Image (tube, rainbow, N blue to C red; front, side):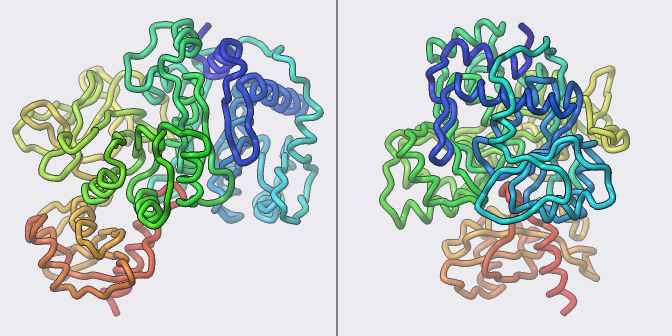
Length: 534
């Protein structure tokens, strides 16, 4: 057996067929039931001409259908492509073209968007529609999801697969159209899915993975808060299922803090995964307001965005027995490292101990000297993606070769402490140059959110005639309290150097973030620059 995700799932399903694999709304599937449903969908897709190497769009909310669909596609060596459910027609059309989609699985409510996106194109080989209570009609041949499953066999009679089969995750970061990160299954298993042993040493064989699932060594119940359009949520799904554990989903279109906390108790979730402060803050507010049983919860893990120190402290106050983990990584890099607790920080910035394949490089590709204070770029070698789908230029920008070794450089600035820890500073693409000084937005955002009245904040650059750029903050406050610029400056001076302090503030009703929880810096820049020129 190779490290192919469909192969591995099937082996675990055979080993623990009666374990609950999935809890999604009223749906609870065992490993055997989920396997059979995925087989049915896989056979239907084959009947529509979908096969090895073909791409099918998953234009879906979180739910059991996404999990069934991605597994079904891997069974026939095809690839599921995540499509942001907030996209409008032209953006979905871009995805159909850029990802070479042969089919799409979508919600009924999105059919008008699909109709617009496919206007003038050849009909899709498969258009599968999930009923969601809305009324809309497709302009081309389509089939309802459960009807499609009813037309497929539940037999597992597929051909051999490979650890080299592709897993593609479309990621857009905070700007630009999405790009498809191409992973081989085997490389993703070890670099992004913790090698089948969450928090432990990676397995040495597929057989060991199955043995672990049978004996429950790492079996967990995991609840991802992020949508599956986010790579972190997909990684959580596979990490969970490769332990023989239960995946719990908040079924539906949006993040609901109250429902998430209720599900922790209802489904006895032990691990809650989220994306930074955008999801943590509503959970904190709901915990303070309501009465929730959190006795089964052991771990809260943030991936894709870092929990600020002030938010982490609030969680620790409310849930003192829960371990809080900041996971570092991207769709391009996989798992770079993890920091747990206050001890894994340096001057308020998160730090983590690097693995053998992770370091900080200077512009020439040399590792910076630990303890030197020099700033470089986080880089990883070893098992890496092949690159971006159909984008050689962007691949060359992100994946580099130094001294005969291939590296991925995700774009994060960092430094190496004397004791070997990497201290994360911020994303290079959003670094603000003010009067020759570098300011990382994340550091200023953390300082702002340490204010008792500030809920969430984004920091951007606006033009300045003297310094080139100045630091501007867009934030919301509890009770919509109005704070003066002087008050904000006085607070920030306690946490950051003078040149990093915002010179302009805008208070808004809410702070916009992507569905994944990542910051919407374009939104913040539009507001801040509009005020600067007003």
